[in-house]
Length: 346
Image (tube, rainbow, N blue to C red; front, side, top):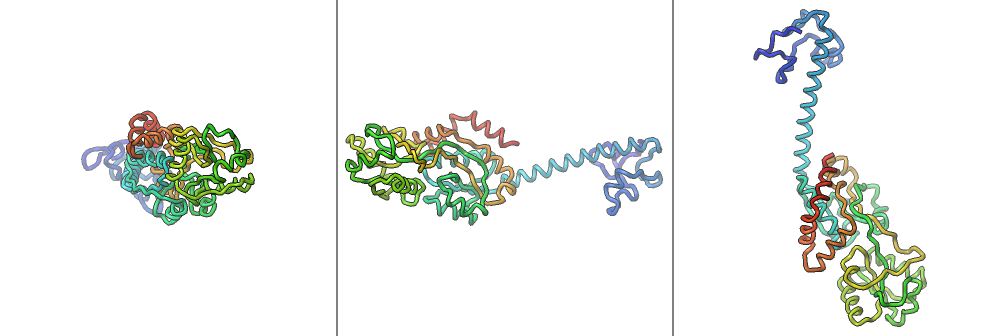
């Protein structure tokens, strides 16, 4: 190809800054790129370049190569702009304020911020309120155990929601007694009913664990009353009973600092009333993953081992706030967080 050069004396096919070759018919909107790459321009139509007919193939190859370079550069610009826009977006994260939930949701919040996102964090006290906020768009994502613990809420709202990823696995809940109480199964609870006043000390009414306990009372024919209360009140009674070496029947879950601090044991559940070990899922409003690709990749890269959830919970029991406990865990697990970053950069 013989080129006379552009206005700056450079060949328009080799200089990255000049792509404008005026060829009649080739740049016509009606003909489009098809003619540009499939039809040979006439010599009289060339303004800036001349070429012999036996060099047509080389001319076309040069243009194709140049076009690919320009498209690649254009896509790079588009991706950079999209990334910048994603980083400016506020991701609204929702979580219950429970210790195990916070031990997963706060590291996710920190990782999103590390990846350049702004995060608005909301704590909820009850699942019904949390799911209502998610479906209305008050939060973008929510941490929940939808396979069992919140299965009812998921079934009711699943057409408006989507699963993003599993954030941890292994949470379990059930009935417990102090380790010195001589029973090992829910089936044996009636044998000590008179020693504990026929009461199972409960937590917040409406929780998934309370529903399962009430179901177990019916399924096993237990001569017990389930007492509504709060987690704090339950822990106080459990600690008091253990200090006096008295029997008590209550409910717990793991991971939990309570399982680490107090000598208690889960009662076997031969009828399978209580859910098996469950997963923690990040869920979102339908369409979130498609509209927030980078955020979805970051969220899906986070996985907190269940043992680490227990470690964070123990630090909270030893006097740290949940934020302090998560910060300490974060500093001790740079290798894990770096692996999240590698996965997130896909």
